[in-house]
Image (cartoon, rainbow, N blue to C red; front, side, top):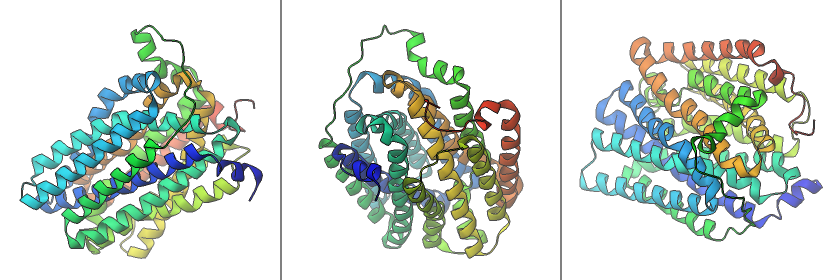
Length: 406
């Protein structure tokens, strides 16, 4: 074990936050597996699966910018704690609704709006908290290590959620609520020196300072927009219930494994990047990784063999992890601490758009062209995005190192 990795493992506040993030991520994944399966069982509609994603995205679109301002004004640890507590309450509500027979399409759509609202405040605070818990020279490695924990949770969450669903949705929601409770306890023990910055006058300029920062930093702008459009076109998560039920014929347990497969690849890659961090040609590596992601989506879309589908999803997860680590490290290293909440808020909008809005795009496209057509067209779209970025953001393609010093 090298010196930097050993030093990282001595950062208590970072490790407690890391464990809390693993608990919330696993709980959230379990909850979303159950929600997706219940919605498709209730309606048998690809459109409704996409609508779940859209309704999670819209509140984030409206609230994330002011949420970033909140993250820069208040203690980010408490914001993350409150959002974890809110997740626990939602999970308990879903368990009660299922137990008492209240579960309906309208309730699931309403819960989707609530989850989007919680995420709007959670993501900027969570993303901007981690850089404050480690020395700057450890940040790229901490980002990869944090991603490894998240991916481990994303692997275990859907797999466990799919298995527990055999015992009933109530069990899945109850275990999710317990995990969110564990996260709350861990977050109460996070201690760090919070930097207090001079109060800024509340104007539209200060609220939207994160947008302005990204707009004027072309490397950061190119990286976050690349992730937005690549995953927006190439994502297939919303359609996994259709593949599991109608194409691959593997049921809810298979759905959990399918949802976990990208995370298996992401975990393997994040562990590799923790041990051997990227040091050169990061711009070219970023674009190549997104191209591989698009190709893997095409293979998944065309596959009717469960094992091939799993491998394609794993490769997509490996490629996506390279993109995530480069993008998150660039954003964190280029952004002053006083603005990290607002910049992270804008970044989280892009993440939300690429995930939740991408789910809606996939559902809507599948309603028109079928699931196979939707996934294949999305993969082709991702490849076209990469080709366009070589022309639109040459400074990103030429970026050699992550550190601003280079």
